[in-house]
Length: 172
Length: 172
Image (tube, rainbow over all chains, first blue to last red; front, side):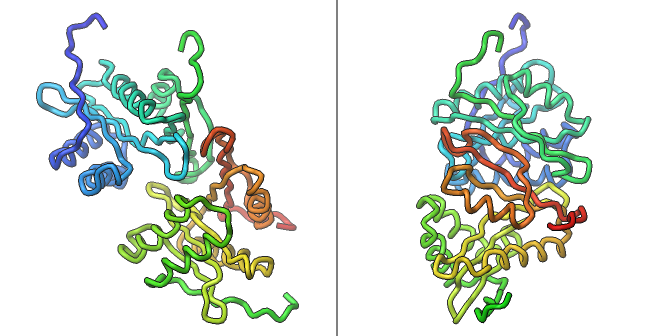
C-alpha cells in the first residue's frame, strides 16, 4: 500500500488485559448484543485458562501500544482441517485502512500452516451486516449455506466458506 | 405400540456413572471415532461440572436398571430459540424398538417447553449414516444445508432442521 500508515503489529498470545481490550473493540463496533460481547470476552478467558486446549486461537493487532483489532479462530472438533473463524473485529477508529483484511489473511495463513482445508464464517443476513458480508466476499469467501430464521424470526444465519485446498481462480 | 416391551424410564440429570454409560453406548453403536466418543463423554463431564451453564441438557433412557440410550441437546448461544441436538444414541441391544424415537420426541418436548423454535442436527452424508438420516427424516426433520467435504475430503456435513414454530402438515 502507498499510504504512510504503519502496519499494525501482530501478536498471537492473549494476556489478562486482552479481555478488556476485546470487550472495548467489540463494543465500539456497535454491532453486537451484550450477550455476543460476553461470548467474545469468554473466548479470551477460555484461551487464558486452557491454552491450545481451549480450541481458540488469536491474532491481535497492536498499533501505538493499543490493540486495535483481533481475529479468533479454531479447529472444528471431529473434522480433518475445517476451521471456524469465530470473531474478527476492528476498532472503528482505524477501520478502512485494511486492518481487518490483514488480520484475516494472517489467520488464514496460520490455519493453512496448521493443515486447514476450509475456513467457515457464520454471520447474520440482517441489513446491518451487508458490509460484513461484502468484506468476506471480497476476501474470497463464498456463500455455502443459508439457515432461515436461525438467529431469530426474520434473522437468517449465512455460512461463508473459503477452501484452502483448491487453487484460487485468476482475479481472486 | 402393541408389543409387551416396557417403555424405558427417562431421567434428566446425569450422574458420575453416566460418563461410563454414555461411553459404553456410543462405543457399542460402532458408529463413532475415538475422538467422537471422547467428545460425547466430555459433554457429560461438562454437564456434571457446570450444570445448566454447560449448555448441555440430557435425556437418558433406563431399562431394567441399565442406561440403554440418551439424547443430549442445548440452546445455541446468541440465538432466540434455536437448539442443537448434539447426540442421540441407543444401545444396539435394544435398537429397533422405538427407544431412539421416544428419546427424540422427549427432547423435542423439552425444547419446545423451553421456548425452542428450531432444532438442528448435524451429521455426515457418508453411506454409513443412511439409516441415521432416514431416522431424522422419518421424525420430521428436513435437510437444511449441505457443506461439501466439511468433515474430510469426501465427507460432507448435512444439517437437518425441525421447525417447532410451524404447524406440521397432515401425515407428519
